[in-house]
View (tube, rainbow, N blue to C red):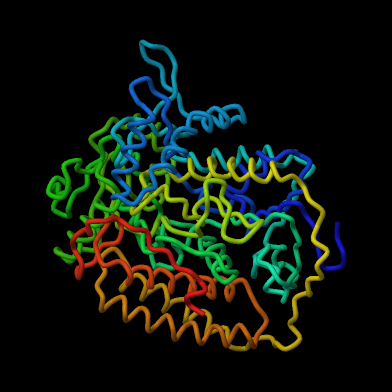
Length: 535
């Protein structure tokens, strides 16, 4: 139902990746659902995920083994109850995807035809089910194809959320979420979306770093909006750097899936020598934080621009059939991976922390949920194990759907919500401020808050982010908003939260490695930031 520039829905889902689309599919058709997409529906991290989904599907594997591997990778910070909750549902999630039509790879041997499972870093068994090296694309397209037939679901393309609307944000008593202000990029007008339930499925914040494997949409929007609205955030100091992204001036950090190492690819120095055996007993299959730190160490020690990932010893047909997209993409840059190693560097890949939620995705604000990479559930601890992320998206989307379903559609709030007011702002003639600050932010985050940290670097970053925040807050107050301004504002907020979280952790654990505190503390504790303490 539209009222001028206002739209009412039962459920407003901000984000159209695996988490958001799974939620929409899991809700009954009695709910009217709006899904906001920054660009096209599949322009997000899910679509570009290569590896697969971790799930217990083989008779030689077990739920307990998957749980223990996840706990080990998380370096003592995973919440065991959350890990158990997630892993136990993995077989059902895979069955559901197959029923929807997702085409996972199969193989045939003397035992007959069965799904091909690969092994990735941190896993003690082959348990990653995949669709060649483009699993995310296969899942995303299937989910979208299903949803396109649902008359109760409406996609809004090129819509960017500005801020959440809560009772207290409009001067009323209470915290309940009422909807969101949203920028229509085509009209450049801010529209008001009212909803009984609002779900943040906006992904992570890896765009805060100069080099990232993520698409341009990963700007921490949900985390920043939830923080401004009053939600706690947790463990944002744990930023996962994918160890192997293609190093080429024109490649824009194209990710090279961990599954290559699962199938025997070796990491080599420029002289061809192996080095991972010096850092971990699992070698190339060590958890991602260890592999990324080892590569970073060797690059700094040698002063080289990259190291190399070599799978050329495997059969040519095997490489082409299992990794067709990587093979084709590398060929575009003159690299035949069947004959020569791939130049690689680490790049920011996954935000392990986020908005604090319970097991149903509910946040601190009534009727506001967060699912997928934007959330902090306790699953990943200090380091996410490979291919647990798509699983988390779908498990917690299912849980959130059950919670919303149990409460049912409700009558829309009758509280009057003011339209977006831009009567006091003008068009900007200083967009150079946005581009300059954007570049500065991502560079100092890479240099000072990257794979290896120190107190001095973190304090430098803190001073710079405070200055940027002042400039952008003033800019936001005086000029009409734009897509780039909104993303920059959100990235500055999340960068500040990452830095503050890192400053508070006086140890090296998982993805947070600092030269000033190289040892583990005896007791593992989450880093929880509370907005009311920063007023």
